[in-house]
Structures are given as C-alpha cells and as structure tokens.
Length: 175
Image (cartoon, rainbow, N blue to C red; front, top):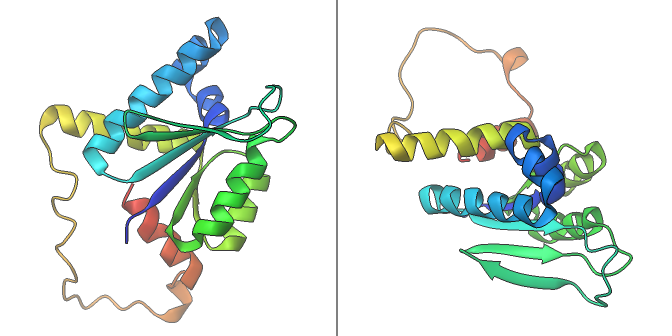
C-alpha cells in the first residue's frame, strides 16, 4: 500500500527553523525551498506527496493545481482555507493518507477519518534524516524486513497499543 503524504504547506514552513527565515524574506522562496526538499525526500522514499497552500486571498474561483518535481501542489480557492482542502483529501484517502500539520483541528479530523498524522517538526526531522541517509549511501529499507525474533519476554494485553495507534505507528515508520 503506497502512502499519500498530505502536507499543510505554510504550517510546515512556519514550524521549520530554516524555512521560516526564507518565508519571512520572500513567500515564494519559502515555498520553492519546501518543494525542493520534498522532491529530494520523494526521490529517496518514493511516497506520493501533496502540499496544500492557502489561496484564500487569491482571485481564483477554483483550486489551482500544479505538479513541480513530482510534488503535487494545491492552492485552495478564493475564500477557502487550506485546512478545508486537507480535511477533504484526508476524508477521501482515509487509510492511505498521512497528514503532516501541527494544527490540532486538522490532526484530530484526519485521525477520525482513519488517516495517520505526524507533526510538522517531526516530519521535517524525517526529511532531514532521509537526505542524510541518501548522502551517506544508506538504504532506508535496510533492516526493515528482519521480522519477528523469538524472545522470552512476555507482552501482555495491558502493554499493547490500541489498533488505531498500532496502524499509525506502522505508517509513520514508513516515512
């Protein structure tokens, strides 16, 4: 099952220490740098990625969509928040979606739809780690298929995560 990563673009930019400075100087430069980093991440990990930006103040009557370096970019239509677009996409994708945002309203709605969620800062760390692994030549899938190892340590049901929490853990581990 391929993952579809849906990113709250401005939220990720403004939560990032490095991208925030670019965004303050020039909004377009911040967006371009985010897309460049996501393209590098996609090249390594191979997940489908969609970045949603607010187009609330634009004059566009419909959503503006474009594809840059393999990253799908969506600007919400006039008068609509990016949050609404992200919620709609999470509801449509359900189990396949991983929503990246630090907005609790988006995260809670996405979880209720069955999508996995991850905070912006945590996702940025994963992007940085993937880029580092690519530079060092480490395969991100290495060691992933080792499977179960026999052990005498018992895990009773009281220590087991809920089914939804286990599914989320599996999805975020793939990032």
